[in-house]
Amino acid sequence: MRISTLSLLVALVIAVPAFSQTTMPLWPGTPPGAPNVPDGQQEHDTTSSSDDMIAGRRVARIGFVSKPTLAFYPAPAGKNTGATVVVFPGGAYKILAYDLEGTEVCDWLNGIGVSCALVKYRVPNAGPFPKYTEDLADAQRAVRIVRQHATEWQLDPHRVGVLGFSAGGHIVAVLDAHAADAVYPAIDDADKLSARPDFALLIYPGYLHQENDLLAVRPEVKPVALTPPSFLIQTEDDPVKVENALVYYEALKQVKVPAEMHLFANGGHGYGLRPTKLPVTHWPDLAATWLHTLGITTP
Image (cartoon, rainbow, N blue to C red):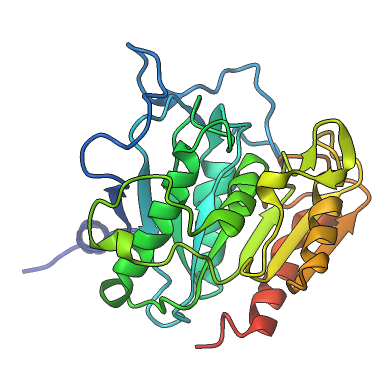
């Protein structure tokens, strides 16, 4: 029997998925806390034709998330270092920039041998902390679930970090300071595990300086002795204010938490890791070097 080349290629595409991904709910049943989405609203991409594009491409702005999930993207078997990063997209606690600051980040992490756990946390009306605790609960639960699946997913439970953009950077800072806080009742064995990240990356973070004092860190994100080594990226012309990263970096120094910050003149806010002519968009190379220096990406 003769099989055409086209038929063979089609068969291979059907047999081999383009990527391996596991998506699961963060919570069995109804998530703890008050409902955050008005009745009748369903999760959907809220992007409209009038929304800004980034690097010439649209951004998926997922809104009305009431059923948070974790999507696990394993590093390729031949490159897997055992490290994992739990990713929190930004979106001002109103939406999630789910591709720009989520799936595209997982692609980059997988490329450097790091597995990615992408969190679709609740929005809107579930953050920021301390007014709301639901998104901190989602963050704690996500880190614990990753550690619970360490053996199954072939990862090192002692090399589980977090990365957040904008509002997601605020979630990372809150988690780093409140990983052990009991903000929800224990549900299963996952909740017996630590929610403390082993390292943290905050990319153009928001909500870190006090509202009425640009030179003071907010008390709810003030670093503590157990805050993990941290990496920050910021631009001077960020409309969300460069002081967010500056005051947080200084607060990290005060408690002797190892930190590295890169400050760029231009770039604004919300660029993700889509490369442009501006140097700041090449921050993933700096982050990869930092992870290697820490020994995170050493197999």
